[in-house]
Every structure is written in C-alpha cells, then in structure tokens.
Image (cartoon, rainbow, N blue to C red):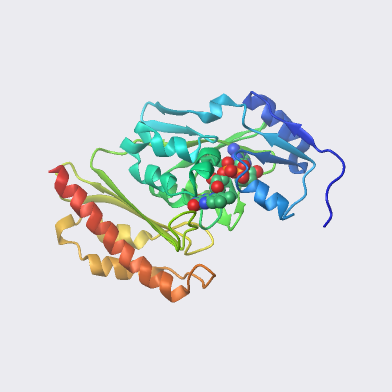
Length: 295
Ligand SMILES: Cc1cc2nc3c(=O)[nH]c(=O)nc-3n(C[C@H](O)[C@H](O)[C@H](O)COP(=O)(O)OP(=O)(O)OC[C@H]3O[C@@H](n4cnc5c(N)ncnc54)[C@H](O)[C@@H]3O)c2cc1C
C-alpha cells in the first residue's frame, strides 16, 4: 500500500482567528482535526489524502458550554463525556446528554467531539437527531463571513454538509426550552457496547402551562435516511391535543409509514420500519409517565 513519505504540515493554533487564517490560506489541502475518532480511521483507510492538519485541540474557547441569555452555547470541541456529565445539559437537554452517554466507549466519549459528530455527518451519528429535535443552530465562521444555520439545513447526505473548506464549525446554539418540555431518546443497535445505531428516535414534546395540551412536537430519527430526518406530520397530528387522549398506536404507525429506510448490514428495511413504530410508542409512553410525575 502507498504510504506518504514527505512530512505534511501540522498546525495547532490557540486562537480562532489564527485557525481561520490557516484555513483561508490552505483551504482544501488541509484537514481539520478535532478528536480524530472518525478522521484517523478514514485516514488509515486512505479515504482521502491530506497535505496538512489543522488541530483544534488548543482553542480553549471551543471547549466551553455556557448559557447566554436564553440560549445554550456549546463549543465545537466539547466532548461527548462533557455533554454526558454537564449539569446544564442534563437539566435543559436530557436527551442530548443521554445520546452522548450512549456513544461508543469511555475512550471514544473522552476524545470524540460534538463538532466532529456533526461535520462527519454519518446517518448513524447519535447527536444529530437530538440536535435537530432541540432546534439547534450551527455557527459557521470563515475569515470572510459568519453564518448561523439551522441543523436541518446543514446535512446534505452521508458525510456531506454545506460546510465549505474555508469554514469552521465553531458553536452549536440551542434555545433554552420552556419548563414543560419532555424528551425521550431511544437507540436500537445490535451490541451492548460500541453500538453503531440501527435506528435512533428522539421525541421532544412541549406542553402548555397546565401540562395537559401539547403545544409543539419534534420527532426526529437517525439511521433511516441519508440524513437525520423529522416527521413533521406527527407535529400536525399532536399539536393542540390533550396528551391523555392521543392514540399512541396510530402515531407509531405514522412514523412507520413516513420513513423509507434501506437494507444494510445493521438491519433490513422491514426491521427498521417495525422497530420505528414500536420505539415511537415507547417514547410516547415514557413522556406520558414523566408528565404524570410532574403533576
Ligand atoms: C470505536 C468507535 C465507536 C464509535 N461509536 C460511535 C457511536 O456510538 N455513536 C456515534 O455517533 N459515533 C460513534 N463513533 C464515531 C465518532 O467517535 C464520533 O462521530 C465523534 O463525535 C467524532 O468526533 P471527533 O472529534 O473525533 O471528530 P474528528 O474525527 O476529529 O473529525 C470528524 C470530521 O469532522 C471535521 N471536523 C471536526 N471538527 C470540526 C469543526 N469544528 N469544524 C469543521 N470541521 C470539523 C473533521 O475534519 C472530520 O471531517 C465511533 C467511533 C469509533 C472509532
């Protein structure tokens, strides 16, 4: 197998501005590296060639989780372990915390980052559907411009996003949810450890003040399409209804009918459709129980 013999350049700036300058100068020739848990495997498989690395590990600003007015700002280099353990993430976005806790092994959670999970854009990326369900926006920066884009506009297909070579993903911005917001995260995979998802489902339900009527809903799934998807028909069906009068079986069936997954080594199309229905019903039951506890 061909191995590179000339040394390639390696940059590890401490400031965002320096990183952006390096990117604008070297553009496509250079590869951004965060935790390296996706990248290095792809590199050793020779899925691409690189002439240099831009390592984000020294940019301390990227490693913070902070609340700014009514938003949570998560730096792109925040690891899965940080997401899993942060009290603020647990409080406001429990589904994101649980999804992070379900990723890989402790080693992967300590190295792998939210930014890497997003930009890698695997249909099985565990954080993608929780981020969509919580209305996340991504802050993209280059030396030329700043763009804030909703998560649902970012993904184009497996490993394809709208990110340009001169752009960095710097922050993930989440609106703080209203008090009566409930969430459920379900990941189905074949093994107990190091599971790559066969299917994931996130249900986030916002209730009215009296905790009876559904105000808003996001139903997002991973591993059933080239990108994470939302089943918008569920929102239409549930909004304005009394939660106790919802027909869970009908809602589960809607999810099954609206997805068109493919067969792959992790599961057949039929299996994924059947499971999608069941986990939607489970998610509704889980939210129903959490709601009753709150009364
Ligand atoms: C054994 C194993 C188990 C795994 N299990 C899971 C799992 O259960 N669930 C799951 O979702 N994933 C899993 N993964 C995949 C991987 O760990 C995650 O996707 C992780 O979040 C990637 O983050 P990273 O920081 O390592 O990204 P990297 O590998 O460093 O980068 C990934 C991609 O994102 C780009 N990138 C990174 N940060 C930025 C940025 N700020 N701006 C622009 N581009 C950027 C890189 O150039 C690269 O293209 C697993 C991987 C391994 C090896």
